[in-house]
Image 1 (cartoon, rainbow, N blue to C red):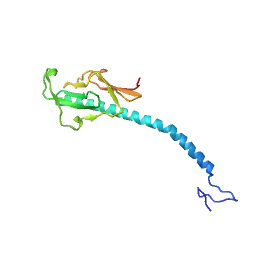
Image 2: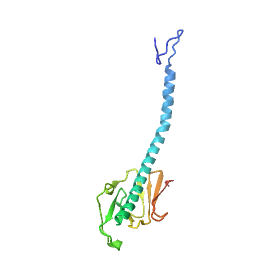
Image 3: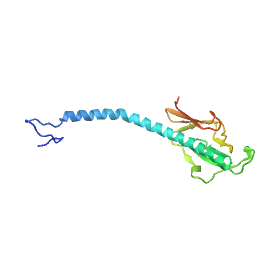
Image 4: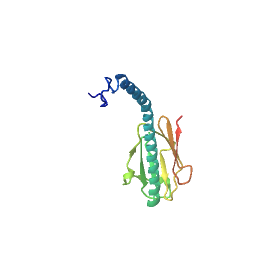
Length: 170
């Protein structure tokens, strides 16, 4: 005669687990899962924040590279609510930036990208201009969730995009 763990009966006593032992293990696993799930949830939110920040930073580096290789101005532009962003290229290279017209260009990276609903982007400007000589307009963006922020900045070093953080969101 076998019990739970294929243990044989020995001298009239079962070597299997009692109901109380099984319930105790279930309670312990329940307590561990109650503690672990919120930590996993927060880690997932932070992972989404970091990924969104890295995506914007990567696209900014691509824009700088394209401006240099095509010898043309490129602009990263956000919509007015900071819910999406895309790249545009100058239609013609003029000396006066104010008169330049920017248009979409054909590239997989030039498509409009959505910002995750749980992410908030803050900045005092809606666009960043990338120059054909490698310079980048000086600006910074805060990419935040409820707890943390990454700062994407071009102010630290000329022609360089830096991702700083994560910083606690206040």
